[in-house]
Image 1: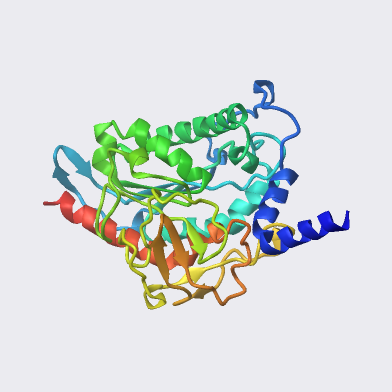
Image 2: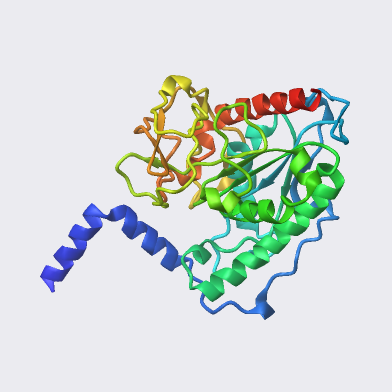
Length: 352
């Protein structure tokens, strides 16, 4: 008995990150199988209450009025942002307006991720019946049905967004984690529409296992000015546990905006935004804006993963899945600047 306890302690010591992941998923495992009778009611995207953010600030970007291939460009760029998983409950899909997941979105995801686009664009962030985080490790029938419910909401929200906004003006799709899974499906489904292809600026599909074949016919962006293409990465500390481990994953370095394995120095990092935690903290007492730290870390794509230097800051403690929670935050200002650069290039091509 003592021998087995010793073995367990040794395993925990050397593989504590993996052990913590297993224990975490056990703690949030749904009690019963997926059941259609327990699916929460859907959101109605004609109502503003079904959107976390539906913010139109047309003064943020200079209007361009011109014709190009029978397409009319007038008005600001819009961002359709699909948020990551913030529901850790034991239902397969998040009930409408679940208070805990909503607080995480408002106090963590909006300042750390969504606000990277606030200086350039109108912001649209739909609420949706996200699949519980356990769905990522669940058996196929349960996970497939839970993700299908989530995608049906994302699709309905984007349909309304596209008909009201994207059909007329340029737009960006941005997403993280579960949101990026759904974004890939949107590209497949709506990307066949010529209006979509004409007005699509770029996709920031971050924090998910995405390969070139999944985004076809779209390509991966090769430099910081490319448009109508996709960027993505999954962040991890060197020699640490990685949530994704697929050498075929798309990895574009957000410090150089190149798809190669060259190391990009922290001198290129314009500003990172962390946050102190999210579980076990009274988020209502937390600030909505966090410190920006310049030149915090360098980065290098290696075997499909964006590896970063050891981070000397207390603002990045959420490491359950390596630095997955900070895929956006570690490169907050670089993303913001890059969105502006690509928008400018899109507009310049629109008036050629």
